[in-house]
Image 1 (cartoon, rainbow, N blue to C red):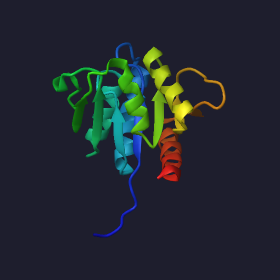
Image 2 (cartoon, one colour):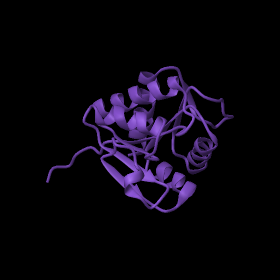
Image 3 (tube, rainbow, N blue to C red):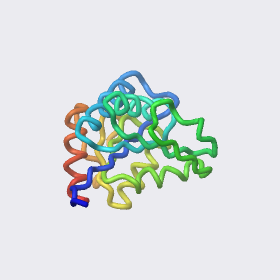
Image 4 (spheres, rainbow, N blue to C red):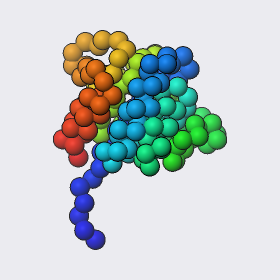
Amino acid sequence: MSAQSPTPVIGVIGPGLGADEADVAWAEEVGGLLAQRGCSVVNGGLDGVMAAVSRGAASHGGLVIGILPGEDRSAGNDHLTFALPTGLGEMRNALVVRASDAVICIGGSWGTWSEVALAIRTGVPIVQLGGWQAPEPGPQLTGSPGEAVEVAVTLAQKRI
């Protein structure tokens, strides 16, 4: 068995219901770019930003893991490689963050903001694309999907 450099696992977080069109478009592009970089993607597995990043990554052959809040595997979006039901509700947000080498936050909602806070508290690098402005030491702000992926992968590689 040859030693291989591990590939980063990048979490992508953002609103499910109520995600706006711009956030959804960015999420799909981010998913595709991450897959093209060989990264695995982890998210909350549902709709909105989560479905869009899953769709983008899957369309480029990427591995996509959805950590679902409920107990029903079929509740995950159609683009997941693996749907992991937890039965934990919103507490699954901690699993999304802790499974990630870096996190990209696209847009925002109360659930998303809890994941941002968890990432900051646990030292997981976080990159913000659009959305709200957090205080230091908050997410590293970026202005495009390409920049968000580049910063997240660079930060993740420092952790693995």
